[in-house]
Length: 77
Image (cartoon, rainbow, N blue to C red; front, top):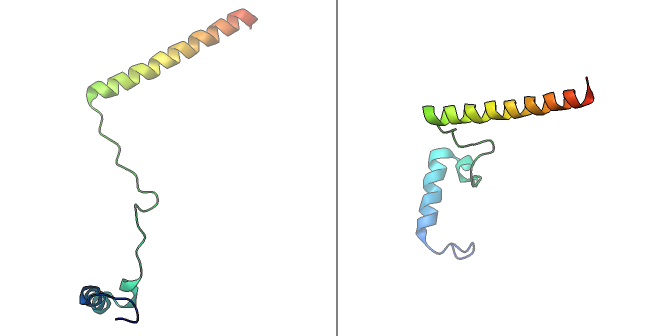
């Protein structure tokens, strides 16, 4: 233990338990943090939130069409 800098028996006991349970593979370090591609689940929207979102999309569409109409009228297409 002194040679490898292990200060107490607790880590040694844990390593032995891991090795008995899962072999050498169990002793390999695990990656930290969230796995790649893990995302939070999208929140369920209330009916009111769905309608507000739809209203914003429709308002944006109307604004786009108004600008398009103005351009067509200006250029005489």
